[in-house]
Length: 498
Ligand code: NOJ
Image (cartoon, rainbow, N blue to C red):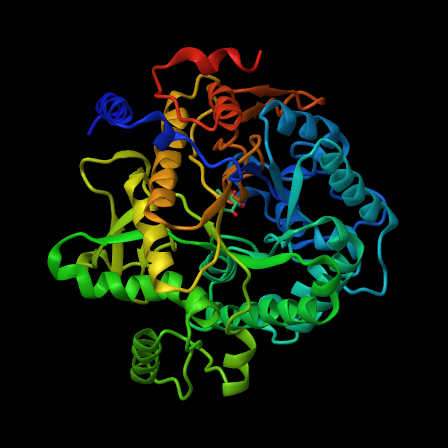
């Protein structure tokens, strides 16, 4: 369906519903999200330690589109007051930030706590709270200290204890003012993309590395959760989760259902089942599939490291809410023989022998991104019936577009995805909050500055990193104020931000 068709349908749909049905509950929290390395800059101020992205962009700049880097990024380290002002302009209830491990702990360990790092995050958190905006804090968002990477990073089981030491400092310093915590951002991407030569540290070890990382990430998260229970929960009463990137998958044809189910287990189950399911541990079918495959390939041990019974208990149930990063929906089918090639994880899985494609009727943005808002409602309902969840928080949702300020497609994306969330709420799914990705254009990892996700555009050639609201910012500000979704062609929202 063309874009215009989508708009017409949405307007008709909106016209059919009573206005109360299009209103978000008063307690629903609207927000935006960002991450330290993508916005802060100030990569070497004061005693900040080097992280894996600092190292990579300086030693292999040709591997980042446009040779971009996060040395200055949005300069939020200096411009955090302007960031808070933008949150206010948007009428946000919450702002999701992340803490840079190497800014707070320059050595990677708690033997040195940076005064400047501590002050920066205290100022940001206090500044938000003064304006009535609640900080949602991610403890780790892809930017591992280089010192720990040099010792194997997420493939070394000791990382779980290094991470817990870091998390303990974070809870002690900021726990009195933070309710929602995300322990680790998108473990799937953290592990899959880094061991398939996509994200940093950019290893080509798809057979083993990603599975070691998979298990270690879950153990690290679980140990931090248990620590919070023991030492901080009674004082601060916060809520912890890890943010999980879920695409919604549908079979490309009826005979692809089995492969689609396996893809669910591979993507979502590997990171969610051990934490959220009643029985814990790896998804059973997938574990068997991977074990059989490893054996056929001549490995003497499973490549996906088994959990001990104690580890299953450690990890199971370590959540207070479900943090969902949702961007798009994909159709799954088996690879044809001529398609057998190593694929990056958003396109398919060489391991499973599967590829993901778009439905011909969908509005598409690139090879991995299409608009299919109904997928989000289906996914929310699926989560709600598959796991025992009291609360689901959408910690990321957004669309990659170009630099234009009048970003009509982004408006339509937000409007239609928010509509599906609202419908899911009416279905009885306990969705309580939403942070749009992202507050402003920022360093989009390997894509550098060539792709924009921001509600605000940022002028990266201007030393002041001027931020300018896009049409989508005006639209979103109107949603947060009215708690209503206006159709794309309703111009009221244009007046909200000048
Ligand atoms: C998810 C990641 O958490 C974030 O860092 C990234 O920029 C967005 N997806 C968009 O790709």
